[in-house]
Image (cartoon, one colour):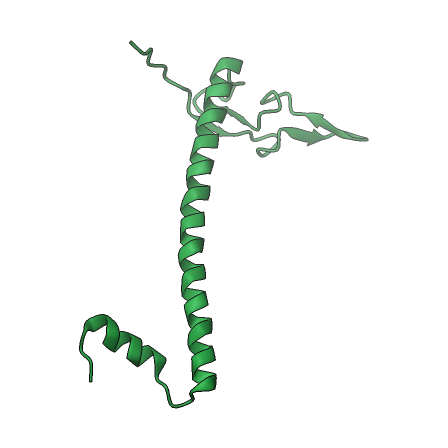
Length: 113
């Protein structure tokens, strides 16, 4: 049986603005407000406990990977359309009287000449 753990909701640290570092006089220092995490407990504004921070970071990582996958799929679709547009332009240059889009539309709807 798995143990259900309620993770704290987090917000961006107001001191370091999510960077986990603050500017010192001569160099950058770890932010003591968020323990260099870049986020704090949303309700209390205090440092997130290390075990909870690990879980929160894993959750953020999974969400980021899901977003990367979604964007990669969208990019693949856009690249496909771009390749088709380039092919259409090449056909138009070779055969100026060819209406590539109309021909493709006719082919896809099944209403031929």
